[in-house]
Length: 221
Image (cartoon, rainbow, N blue to C red):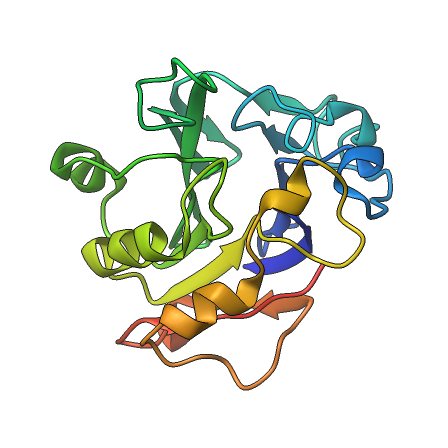
């Protein structure tokens, strides 16, 4: 599996067969950084906010007639890739403040990758069990609108993935209201897990080479 980080909460995944999956593309004029138009066979949208729902940047598919969009709860199989979209909330009040959120489990090349979207609360034991054995966890860490560093680290401890990839934090040039997010350094100050020696834009992961103990994989968009 090849993972490319495009910034904020947006990732591009590619499996060994060449299928391309995008998660949570953003509107650049809101996030304050550019994002190029691209092709994707599958597009996952965790919720309908402009920093996560920019479907228009996907202009077509590569291995299919058209892009398959997943923005509703359910279980899906696309060309051997399994996707489970689990309903959660964008806040601690069952969606009363910011609405619903989807947490995605993507099983690709034998690796179970979980993207938390804009999760705003702790996961229940039942929800964690539903996610199964997680190899890669993509978690918001900037707080304010979703998990902060402490909440994210609590979930990491409960899930025990091989890798955790921080996302949804403040960066230079970000625009309102995202300036309210904490920076990545807040997460790293509280983190007790080993951290990758350098930040990467793209990572290639293989099921046989995943670490036994949780590590923080730093990525740059």
